[in-house]
Figure 1: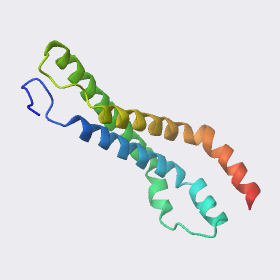
Figure 2 (figure 1 turned 60 degrees about the horizontal axis):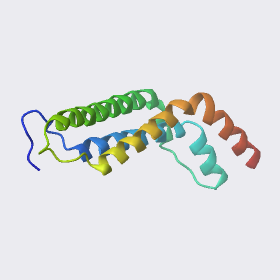
Figure 3 (figure 1 turned 120 degrees about the vertical axis):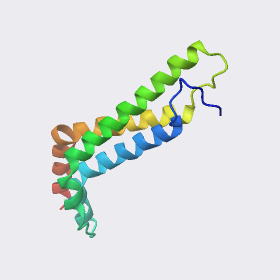
Figure 4 (figure 1 turned 90 degrees about the vertical axis):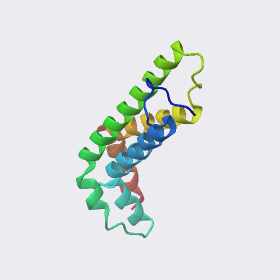
Length: 128
């Protein structure tokens, strides 16, 4: 793939993959606070390292939002640049899928504290 002077040097799939990984990290950090250890204890398992992720969940979520925004901006810039140039390759469906997955994961991690965690904690406490 030839990269013109106007296109960003970051491959679109790499930007999408970075966004998906950071979205998963954000989701995992929010689950590591309360729900994941309780769910594992119900199953008879332990997750001692949860405090490390739970303590950094706000920073990890902020990083995930920044990486996701950067990924969508790169995608938008590539679309805009390629619209004027017919020789430009079509946007990768994989990159768009990864960015969409990352968007869902980050949205879930932002909704985790006020909505998902209270609901899940009630369900898991009933299982104990």
